[in-house]
Length: 243
Image (cartoon, rainbow, N blue to C red; front, top):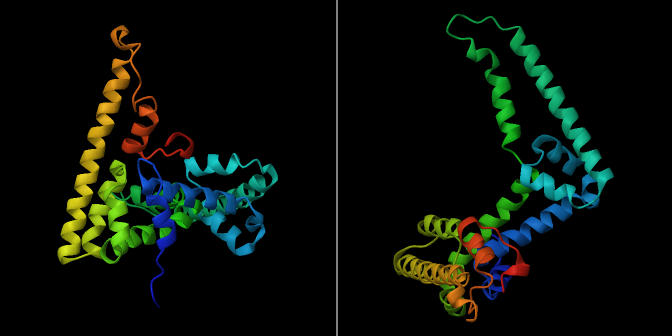
């Protein structure tokens, strides 16, 4: 089966005036996944089975709650709590029947502890996002190799956040080879450094504006330096403060 690529959302993201187009793509996927979770889908048995098993990470549980569907939230949490309690009860019963030697006391609860870690590190929304997001990254590399217009768009973008800069470099050898790989790495390093230098200068001037000697001088491009730097360094993306 041919791999599905996502050329339209990738091109649209790199056409935006934002500090990290990859963050913009992730944010859109996240918004759609949260809306889906509290839409009619939560009443479907197959979806509820997945939310019962995975639950939500702290960030996405808050985002789901903020959708304002309290009945939907209660229904999803109720069956998730019920399944988790049943699983833990079974594991406690299994471990209580085990005989352990002097050096195997920790083994008695190993299955229970493993289950707790699994649930604590799982998230229905993260899982829903990640598979498509991996294909977005693959599509960036594909377009770099195949599309001259995209290459130009990529080179003139405002760069990337630290996380996605590393992700694109890490996966580049998986998706590219030869000259395409070399030129991609070179271009990615260039746009990252150039735009981080720009970010550093904007923050510096933002700080200088608090000096009385500069109070009457223009802000230049530094007035929104803080939220843009938050995107660069932590991937915190808010479309309303990017432009």
